[in-house]
Every structure is written in structure tokens, then in C-alpha cells.
Image 1 (cartoon, rainbow, N blue to C red):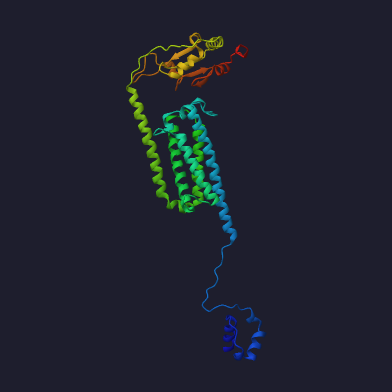
Image 2: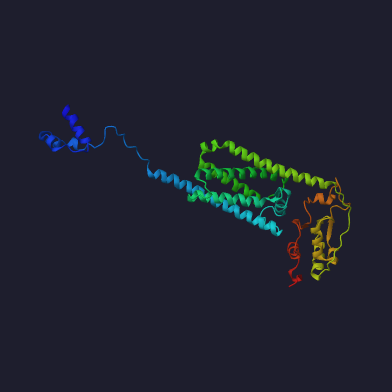
Length: 360
């Protein structure tokens, strides 16, 4: 028993036994024992070495997060380009290309709901998508700026996408209540992008971590909805104050002369029953008439929707109500509705005016 104990001590110790204390018989036994050779040298009080986590699992987790953040950057980029286009439309005053919804899309984008405390909504969306793309890129590359770390960046991305999802929910409610018969492709696209970014962020953080930040999310959502509701309530108050204005009807004067093409087109529009609906106080209606000129404008079938003037409680002419006119000017040609000012060549094309009669 003492021999076995001494042999174990001999193998666990890294310091060799001095020559004068060596026992030849003991050394020969130790050398001939194969079981003792495999023992490792370590101290009595040492702890077992911890098992390392497989590197492949860590690499898979890192790769999955990188892919998620790259997807967030791509989606934010789409939103950034969409809002950039809408800001360009807003600055130039031109009509947006609406593949679905036609003129109603432009009406929504130009409504009071497209402005928050005087700031165009596309400009706010541009900043939100740009910020989300910046944070997502830093998380994807693991390179952070402004003194933030990964945890702070994830929290910022969650806060940003939460605010975007809350705003999109509110706008979706406005779209279905204030514009029930209209369609806005850009509005729906923004809703899809915002919610996709939010769900991607939640998936990356995990439900447990997201639940820990539930209070922050509820606070941000409430703040966003309160801000939007306050802005739109103020806008409605300003609009209602205009209801007290009384405008007596007055005839508009057209200063431009008509070209032969404009006169021929006006006669053609009259012959097929095309109608232009407008209001005497509408500057765009006057500009549309100026395109035709004095002589040609008299040939048009123009419907004045407020022939008795405008005052509080005044309703549009029944013909305008039956035609479901929502803005001025509005053309109805062969059953097709055209909102806003139209170029003469556009009216000629829609009405089927003969190309041989158009100017070269």
C-alpha cells in the first residue's frame, strides 16, 4: 500500500528524486509498470480542466446574427430609396407614379396626414430608415462608432424598429378610416418594411430579451402614437377654423389665347362627353383652363361644383357628389378618372383624339 502511494506521488511530481535517495529496486519496479507511465503530472489541489465549447456552435451563432443584420440593412435600404423618391416628388411638386390606386395615391400623399408638425412624413421616414441601416451595418460588421457597444446598438435598433412599427400601425388605421375607398402602394410598402424590420430585430434578440425591454417598447409606441395624434388634431383644428370663411362665387378670367390644336381638342372632348369638374377658387382649375385658352375653354364641358359660392355647411353640386369628386380639377373621360392638371397631349391620348390632328 505504501509502495502504491509512493509511486503515485512520484508520477504526480515534476521534481526528480535526488540520486542519493533513489532506491534501485523501486526505480526498476516503476520503470517496468505500464500503468504508472500513463499518469499525468499535476498538483494535488488542481481542478479538472473545463471543457471548451465547440467552436463550430459559436461560429454558427455569429454567422446567423450577421445574416440577420445584413437583411435588416437591405430592407432599410429599400425604405430609404422609397422615401427618397417621395421626398423628390414633394420638393418638385410632381405627381407620384402609383401603379395601384391612381389619383387617390397622390391625394393621400398630399393630404394633411402626410405632414407631422410641419415636417413632411417622407423626410421623417428617410431619417428612420437611414438610422436603422446605419445601426444594422455596424452590427453586421461588428464595428461600432460614437462610443456604443453591441448591446447598446441592439437596443437602439429595437427602439427604432418599434417606433417605425407603431407609426405604421397608426397610419394603417388612418388609411382604412379616412381613405376607405383609396389605395396607396407606397403606404402599404412602408408598413410591410417597418414590420419586417421589427420582427427581424425581435428574432435576433430572442423573446426573453425582448420581454425584458417590453416597458421601453410600450413607452416608445405610446409616445409615437401620442405625437401623431396631437399633430393631426392640431391640423384638423386649423382646417376647421377655415370653415368660417365665406367665399362668394366669382367668374374666373382666362388670359391666354387658344391654339388651333387646343380648340380642336376641346371640341373633341365635348363630342365624346368628357367633363372637367372644378371650383372657382381652385388655382389648378384656372391653370388647366389657361392651357386651353379663352376660346377653347368655352368648348369644354366644365362643371362648377360650388356655383353658389363657398361658406360653412355648403355642399358640392349634386352632379359633383354623384361623380364622387374628391379633388379639383378632376377629369372623367370615357369612364376614366384623371385627378389634377393634365397636359393637353395626355388628354388627347386618353380621349382617343386622332394623332393626325395633333401638332408635329
